[in-house]
Amino acid sequence: METKRVVIKDVKHPRDGELLEAAQILRDGGLVAFPTETVYGLGANALNEEAAKKIYAAKGRPSDNPLIAHISGEKELAPLVAEIPETAKKLMKAYWPGPLTMIFKKSDKVPYGTTGGLDTVAVRMPSDPIANRMIALAGVPVAAPSANTSGRPSPTTADHVWEDLSGKIEMILDGGPVGIGLESTIVDVTGEVPMLLRPGAITLEMLRELLGQVDVDPAVTGPMSPGMHPKAPGMKYRHYAPKADMTLVEGGTEAMAAEICRLAQESISQGKKTGVICTEETRHLYPESLLGRAQFRSMGVRAKEETIAHNLYAVLREFDDIGVDRIFCEAFPETELGQAIMNRLIKAAGHKIVKV
Image (cartoon, rainbow, N blue to C red):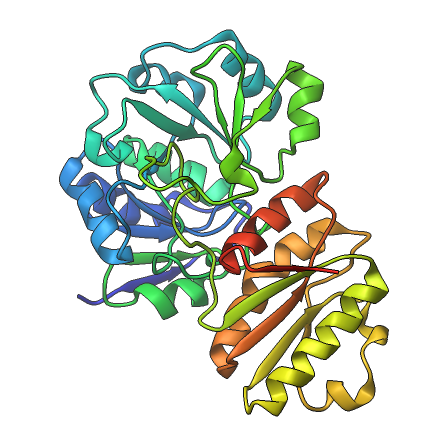
Protein backbone atom coordinates (compact mmCIF):
# COMPACT_ATOMS: atom_id res chain seq x y z
CA MET A 1 0.00 0.00 0.00
CA GLU A 2 1.25 3.49 -0.84
CA THR A 3 0.72 6.03 1.93
CA LYS A 4 -0.16 9.54 0.78
CA ARG A 5 1.14 12.43 2.88
CA VAL A 6 -0.82 15.70 2.79
CA VAL A 7 0.87 18.74 4.33
CA ILE A 8 -1.66 21.20 5.77
CA LYS A 9 -0.49 24.72 4.91
CA ASP A 10 -2.30 26.65 7.66
CA VAL A 11 -2.78 24.29 10.61
CA LYS A 12 -5.07 26.71 12.48
CA HIS A 13 -7.31 27.25 9.47
CA PRO A 14 -7.23 24.08 7.34
CA ARG A 15 -9.07 24.27 4.04
CA ASP A 16 -11.81 21.73 3.34
CA GLY A 17 -10.09 20.91 0.06
CA GLU A 18 -7.10 19.60 2.01
CA LEU A 19 -9.29 17.30 4.12
CA LEU A 20 -11.99 15.98 1.76
CA GLU A 21 -9.95 13.03 0.51
CA ALA A 22 -9.15 11.98 4.10
CA ALA A 23 -12.85 12.22 4.99
CA GLN A 24 -13.74 10.01 2.02
CA ILE A 25 -11.11 7.42 2.97
CA LEU A 26 -12.66 7.23 6.46
CA ARG A 27 -16.19 6.84 5.06
CA ASP A 28 -14.92 4.08 2.76
CA GLY A 29 -13.42 2.09 5.66
CA GLY A 30 -9.78 3.14 5.26
CA LEU A 31 -7.19 4.51 7.69
CA VAL A 32 -5.99 8.11 8.06
CA ALA A 33 -3.40 9.41 10.53
CA PHE A 34 -4.08 12.97 11.68
CA PRO A 35 -2.85 15.50 14.24
CA THR A 36 -4.72 16.28 17.44
CA GLU A 37 -3.83 18.62 20.29
CA THR A 38 -2.48 15.60 22.24
CA VAL A 39 -0.66 13.20 19.86
CA TYR A 40 -1.22 12.02 16.28
CA GLY A 41 -4.17 9.63 15.96
CA LEU A 42 -4.78 6.73 13.58
CA GLY A 43 -8.39 7.11 12.46
CA ALA A 44 -11.06 4.77 11.10
CA ASN A 45 -14.85 4.82 11.03
CA ALA A 46 -15.81 3.94 14.63
CA LEU A 47 -19.10 2.39 13.48
CA ASN A 48 -17.41 0.04 10.99
CA GLU A 49 -16.11 -3.08 12.74
CA GLU A 50 -13.96 -4.10 9.76
CA ALA A 51 -12.33 -0.66 9.70
CA ALA A 52 -11.58 -0.95 13.44
CA LYS A 53 -9.89 -4.29 12.77
CA LYS A 54 -7.59 -2.53 10.30
CA ILE A 55 -6.40 -0.21 13.10
CA TYR A 56 -5.45 -3.19 15.29
CA ALA A 57 -3.66 -4.83 12.35
CA ALA A 58 -1.71 -1.71 11.28
CA LYS A 59 -0.54 -1.02 14.83
CA GLY A 60 -0.07 -4.62 15.96
CA ARG A 61 -2.42 -3.71 18.83
CA PRO A 62 -4.10 -6.29 21.10
CA SER A 63 -7.80 -6.49 20.22
CA ASP A 64 -8.96 -6.17 23.85
CA ASN A 65 -7.42 -2.68 24.04
CA PRO A 66 -10.36 -0.29 23.45
CA LEU A 67 -10.34 2.57 20.94
CA ILE A 68 -11.48 6.16 21.52
CA ALA A 69 -14.29 7.44 19.29
CA HIS A 70 -13.66 11.06 18.26
CA ILE A 71 -16.52 13.42 17.44
CA SER A 72 -16.64 17.00 16.12
CA GLY A 73 -19.65 18.30 18.07
CA GLU A 74 -21.73 17.50 21.17
CA LYS A 75 -24.78 16.49 19.12
CA GLU A 76 -22.77 13.52 17.81
CA LEU A 77 -22.44 12.01 21.30
CA ALA A 78 -26.02 10.89 21.99
CA PRO A 79 -26.22 8.22 19.22
CA LEU A 80 -23.06 6.54 20.59
CA VAL A 81 -24.02 6.23 24.26
CA ALA A 82 -26.83 4.74 26.32
CA GLU A 83 -27.03 7.79 28.61
CA ILE A 84 -25.21 11.04 29.35
CA PRO A 85 -24.77 11.37 33.14
CA GLU A 86 -24.77 14.79 34.85
CA THR A 87 -21.08 14.36 35.64
CA ALA A 88 -20.38 14.06 31.91
CA LYS A 89 -22.41 17.18 31.15
CA LYS A 90 -20.31 19.18 33.64
CA LEU A 91 -17.08 17.85 32.12
CA MET A 92 -18.26 18.54 28.57
CA LYS A 93 -19.13 22.12 29.45
CA ALA A 94 -15.74 22.70 31.10
CA TYR A 95 -13.34 20.77 28.87
CA TRP A 96 -14.84 19.94 25.47
CA PRO A 97 -13.52 20.38 22.89
CA GLY A 98 -10.17 19.44 24.42
CA PRO A 99 -7.86 16.73 25.77
CA LEU A 100 -10.51 14.86 27.79
CA THR A 101 -11.94 11.41 27.01
CA MET A 102 -14.98 10.07 28.86
CA ILE A 103 -16.12 6.46 29.24
CA PHE A 104 -19.88 5.96 28.74
CA LYS A 105 -22.17 2.95 28.56
CA LYS A 106 -22.30 2.29 24.82
CA SER A 107 -25.33 2.26 22.55
CA ASP A 108 -26.11 -0.68 20.26
CA LYS A 109 -24.84 1.44 17.37
CA VAL A 110 -21.20 1.08 18.47
CA PRO A 111 -19.66 -2.29 17.53
CA TYR A 112 -17.70 -4.35 20.04
CA GLY A 113 -14.74 -4.26 17.64
CA THR A 114 -14.33 -0.58 18.52
CA THR A 115 -14.79 -1.01 22.28
CA GLY A 116 -12.40 -3.94 22.73
CA GLY A 117 -15.38 -6.18 23.61
CA LEU A 118 -16.62 -3.88 26.38
CA ASP A 119 -20.15 -2.59 27.00
CA THR A 120 -18.67 0.89 27.36
CA VAL A 121 -17.34 3.35 24.79
CA ALA A 122 -14.65 6.03 25.13
CA VAL A 123 -15.51 9.36 23.45
CA ARG A 124 -13.53 12.58 22.92
CA MET A 125 -14.09 15.84 21.06
CA PRO A 126 -10.67 17.16 19.92
CA SER A 127 -10.00 20.89 19.76
CA ASP A 128 -7.33 20.63 17.05
CA PRO A 129 -8.80 22.40 13.97
CA ILE A 130 -7.56 19.75 11.52
CA ALA A 131 -8.92 16.83 13.54
CA ASN A 132 -12.23 18.49 14.31
CA ARG A 133 -12.94 19.56 10.74
CA MET A 134 -11.86 16.23 9.25
CA ILE A 135 -14.29 14.37 11.54
CA ALA A 136 -17.10 16.79 10.64
CA LEU A 137 -16.44 16.30 6.91
CA ALA A 138 -16.31 12.51 7.31
CA GLY A 139 -19.74 12.55 8.92
CA VAL A 140 -18.89 9.55 11.12
CA PRO A 141 -17.29 9.20 14.57
CA VAL A 142 -13.60 8.41 14.13
CA ALA A 143 -12.00 5.69 16.26
CA ALA A 144 -8.39 6.68 16.80
CA PRO A 145 -5.62 5.39 19.04
CA SER A 146 -2.15 6.92 18.75
CA ALA A 147 -0.72 6.55 15.23
CA ASN A 148 2.28 4.38 16.09
CA THR A 149 3.34 0.77 16.29
CA SER A 150 1.72 -0.58 19.46
CA GLY A 151 3.93 -0.22 22.52
CA ARG A 152 6.28 2.39 21.02
CA PRO A 153 6.44 6.03 22.13
CA SER A 154 3.45 7.93 20.78
CA PRO A 155 3.92 10.13 17.68
CA THR A 156 4.08 13.89 18.12
CA THR A 157 5.06 14.69 14.51
CA ALA A 158 4.03 13.35 11.11
CA ASP A 159 7.59 12.04 10.69
CA HIS A 160 7.06 9.75 13.69
CA VAL A 161 3.88 8.41 12.04
CA TRP A 162 5.65 7.92 8.70
CA GLU A 163 8.43 5.99 10.44
CA ASP A 164 5.96 3.52 12.01
CA LEU A 165 3.04 3.26 9.58
CA SER A 166 4.17 4.21 6.06
CA GLY A 167 2.93 1.51 3.68
CA LYS A 168 0.30 0.29 6.18
CA ILE A 169 -2.29 3.09 5.94
CA GLU A 170 -3.86 5.18 3.17
CA MET A 171 -3.02 8.71 4.30
CA ILE A 172 -1.17 10.92 6.79
CA LEU A 173 -2.35 14.49 7.37
CA ASP A 174 0.78 16.45 8.32
CA GLY A 175 -0.16 19.26 10.69
CA GLY A 176 3.32 19.79 12.14
CA PRO A 177 4.25 19.12 15.78
CA VAL A 178 1.37 18.63 18.22
CA GLY A 179 0.75 20.99 21.13
CA ILE A 180 0.47 18.98 24.36
CA GLY A 181 2.46 15.85 23.55
CA LEU A 182 0.69 13.43 25.93
CA GLU A 183 -2.52 11.49 25.31
CA SER A 184 -5.86 12.73 26.66
CA THR A 185 -7.06 12.39 30.23
CA ILE A 186 -9.58 9.52 30.51
CA VAL A 187 -12.42 9.61 33.05
CA ASP A 188 -14.99 6.84 33.56
CA VAL A 189 -18.38 8.48 34.18
CA THR A 190 -20.43 5.25 34.29
CA GLY A 191 -20.28 4.84 38.07
CA GLU A 192 -21.58 6.92 40.98
CA VAL A 193 -18.11 8.38 41.53
CA PRO A 194 -16.08 9.39 38.46
CA MET A 195 -12.84 7.42 38.06
CA LEU A 196 -9.58 8.67 36.54
CA LEU A 197 -8.26 5.92 34.27
CA ARG A 198 -5.44 7.81 32.55
CA PRO A 199 -3.97 11.17 33.61
CA GLY A 200 -3.33 13.91 31.08
CA ALA A 201 -3.41 17.67 30.57
CA ILE A 202 -6.78 17.86 32.37
CA THR A 203 -5.26 17.04 35.74
CA LEU A 204 -6.73 15.23 38.74
CA GLU A 205 -6.66 18.53 40.64
CA MET A 206 -8.72 20.20 37.88
CA LEU A 207 -11.22 17.33 37.88
CA ARG A 208 -11.66 17.42 41.66
CA GLU A 209 -12.09 21.18 41.66
CA LEU A 210 -14.97 20.79 39.20
CA LEU A 211 -16.59 17.56 40.44
CA GLY A 212 -15.53 17.06 44.06
CA GLN A 213 -14.77 13.39 44.62
CA VAL A 214 -12.84 11.67 41.82
CA ASP A 215 -11.30 8.24 42.41
CA VAL A 216 -8.07 7.05 40.75
CA ASP A 217 -7.78 3.62 39.17
CA PRO A 218 -4.83 1.65 40.67
CA ALA A 219 -3.52 1.05 37.12
CA VAL A 220 -2.59 4.76 36.91
CA THR A 221 0.42 4.16 39.16
CA GLY A 222 0.89 0.38 39.11
CA PRO A 223 0.55 -2.59 36.77
CA MET A 224 -2.88 -4.10 36.13
CA SER A 225 -3.67 -7.38 37.81
CA PRO A 226 -3.27 -10.40 35.49
CA GLY A 227 -6.49 -11.34 33.70
CA MET A 228 -8.10 -7.91 34.08
CA HIS A 229 -9.70 -6.37 30.98
CA PRO A 230 -8.51 -2.79 30.31
CA LYS A 231 -11.35 -0.25 30.54
CA ALA A 232 -9.38 2.35 28.58
CA PRO A 233 -6.33 2.64 26.32
CA GLY A 234 -2.91 2.65 27.95
CA MET A 235 -3.87 0.65 31.04
CA LYS A 236 -2.83 -2.97 30.54
CA TYR A 237 0.07 -3.33 28.15
CA ARG A 238 3.61 -1.98 28.05
CA HIS A 239 3.12 1.40 26.45
CA TYR A 240 5.11 4.40 25.31
CA ALA A 241 8.28 2.31 25.47
CA PRO A 242 11.64 2.89 23.78
CA LYS A 243 13.57 -0.05 22.34
CA ALA A 244 16.23 0.32 25.04
CA ASP A 245 15.96 -1.02 28.57
CA MET A 246 14.79 1.95 30.66
CA THR A 247 15.09 2.66 34.38
CA LEU A 248 13.41 5.52 36.23
CA VAL A 249 15.30 6.99 39.20
CA GLU A 250 13.27 8.70 41.93
CA GLY A 251 14.45 10.84 44.84
CA GLY A 252 15.83 14.22 45.84
CA THR A 253 17.39 16.09 42.95
CA GLU A 254 21.06 15.65 43.90
CA ALA A 255 20.66 12.07 45.13
CA MET A 256 18.76 11.20 41.95
CA ALA A 257 21.49 12.64 39.72
CA ALA A 258 24.21 10.88 41.72
CA GLU A 259 22.46 7.51 41.36
CA ILE A 260 21.96 8.04 37.62
CA CYS A 261 25.69 8.83 37.32
CA ARG A 262 26.53 5.59 39.12
CA LEU A 263 24.15 3.50 37.02
CA ALA A 264 25.27 5.12 33.76
CA GLN A 265 28.97 4.59 34.53
CA GLU A 266 28.28 0.94 35.40
CA SER A 267 26.35 0.52 32.15
CA ILE A 268 29.14 2.10 30.08
CA SER A 269 31.74 -0.14 31.75
CA GLN A 270 29.69 -3.12 30.55
CA GLY A 271 30.00 -1.90 26.98
CA LYS A 272 26.42 -0.64 26.72
CA LYS A 273 25.52 2.47 24.74
CA THR A 274 23.88 4.55 27.45
CA GLY A 275 21.38 7.40 27.44
CA VAL A 276 20.46 9.78 30.26
CA ILE A 277 17.29 11.88 30.39
CA CYS A 278 17.65 14.99 32.52
CA THR A 279 16.18 18.50 32.67
CA GLU A 280 17.56 21.99 32.17
CA GLU A 281 17.72 22.50 35.94
CA THR A 282 19.68 19.29 36.62
CA ARG A 283 22.10 19.08 33.70
CA HIS A 284 24.84 20.79 35.73
CA LEU A 285 24.74 17.97 38.32
CA TYR A 286 26.33 15.52 35.88
CA PRO A 287 30.15 15.53 35.57
CA GLU A 288 31.82 16.51 32.30
CA SER A 289 33.50 13.11 32.18
CA LEU A 290 30.10 11.40 31.94
CA LEU A 291 28.63 13.96 29.54
CA GLY A 292 31.24 12.89 27.00
CA ARG A 293 30.62 9.14 27.38
CA ALA A 294 26.83 8.89 27.62
CA GLN A 295 24.12 10.37 25.40
CA PHE A 296 22.38 13.13 27.36
CA ARG A 297 19.01 14.64 26.44
CA SER A 298 17.08 17.29 28.35
CA MET A 299 13.30 16.82 28.34
CA GLY A 300 12.67 20.46 29.19
CA VAL A 301 12.23 22.71 32.20
CA ARG A 302 10.94 21.30 35.50
CA ALA A 303 9.35 24.60 36.41
CA LYS A 304 7.33 24.38 33.16
CA GLU A 305 6.01 20.83 33.14
CA GLU A 306 4.24 21.42 29.82
CA THR A 307 7.72 21.47 28.19
CA ILE A 308 8.46 18.03 29.67
CA ALA A 309 5.14 16.66 28.39
CA HIS A 310 5.71 18.17 24.94
CA ASN A 311 9.20 16.67 24.54
CA LEU A 312 8.84 13.31 26.31
CA TYR A 313 8.02 11.03 23.37
CA ALA A 314 10.34 12.82 20.96
CA VAL A 315 13.27 12.23 23.34
CA LEU A 316 12.43 8.52 23.71
CA ARG A 317 12.18 8.18 19.92
CA GLU A 318 15.51 10.01 19.48
CA PHE A 319 17.18 7.41 21.70
CA ASP A 320 15.64 4.72 19.49
CA ASP A 321 17.10 6.45 16.43
CA ILE A 322 20.65 6.52 17.81
CA GLY A 323 20.41 2.96 19.13
CA VAL A 324 21.10 3.22 22.84
CA ASP A 325 20.96 0.01 24.89
CA ARG A 326 20.00 1.51 28.25
CA ILE A 327 18.27 4.69 29.39
CA PHE A 328 18.32 6.19 32.87
CA CYS A 329 15.69 8.85 33.45
CA GLU A 330 14.94 11.35 36.19
CA ALA A 331 11.56 11.14 37.91
CA PHE A 332 9.10 13.99 38.60
CA PRO A 333 6.67 14.90 41.41
CA GLU A 334 3.32 13.18 40.80
CA THR A 335 1.17 16.28 41.12
CA GLU A 336 -0.61 18.36 38.46
CA LEU A 337 0.77 17.50 35.00
CA GLY A 338 3.58 15.54 36.70
CA GLN A 339 1.10 12.73 37.36
CA ALA A 340 0.60 12.23 33.61
CA ILE A 341 4.33 12.54 32.91
CA MET A 342 5.15 9.91 35.52
CA ASN A 343 2.34 7.62 34.33
CA ARG A 344 3.93 7.54 30.86
CA LEU A 345 7.51 7.20 32.14
CA ILE A 346 6.61 4.38 34.55
CA LYS A 347 4.93 2.43 31.75
CA ALA A 348 7.80 3.20 29.34
CA ALA A 349 10.21 1.76 31.92
CA GLY A 350 8.03 -1.32 32.46
CA HIS A 351 7.61 -0.25 36.12
CA LYS A 352 11.39 -0.46 36.70
CA ILE A 353 12.02 2.23 39.32
CA VAL A 354 15.03 2.84 41.56
CA LYS A 355 14.28 4.93 44.66
CA VAL A 356 17.09 6.83 46.40
